[in-house]
Amino acid sequence: MRKPNNYENTQAQGEFTPVELGGHTLVIKQVEERMSKTNKPMIVVYFDFAPGDKQAGYFEEVFANDIRPEKKWPNQGTNYILTEDNDGNCSRSFKTFLTCVEHSNNGFETQWGDNFGQQFKNKLVGGVFGIQMDFYNGRELEKRVLRWFVSHDKAEEAEIPMETETQAYKDHINGYPGYPQGSTPAGDGFMNIPDGIDEELPFN
Image (cartoon, rainbow, N blue to C red; front, side, top):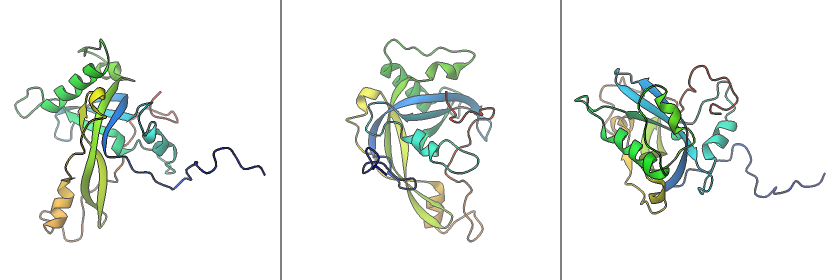
């Protein structure tokens, strides 16, 4: 057999390249309107690293290599944003997201009304990744998560954020107040694909 082209540089399944810390250019795959568990309006932003980014197509590849029967879009490529603060006014994180998308796409202005999420499909935005310490299934985990959005032209110069901790990690460090001995908060690190999407990839 002839050795296939690019054999040395082809990544075997099961090998894992972590997300690089700092700024990335993102392409928005889908924005969904939902209600949070506490019944507050929110959006869910699904994204990947954009063409031209140093890790372009990263989350699509992770998704393609997911061998579980029910494929799920990676949690690292998903962001939840409450649209209102505790007083019922626009939240800063929602306004930041919209402003960053508008600044990243010439001439784009947010349109309000029905099918709100559709206008963001394939739009660019910047994102900054940092380390978040977590505790799951009896193990301390160092996750690389989206910390905040920026305009895509600011992504390259963005500094790596300071490390942060999940509540589960803080509870673990402090001896689990509020959890039965030896138990951990639930969650498998992945996000369910939205209902009603049967395609091989969740976003077309």
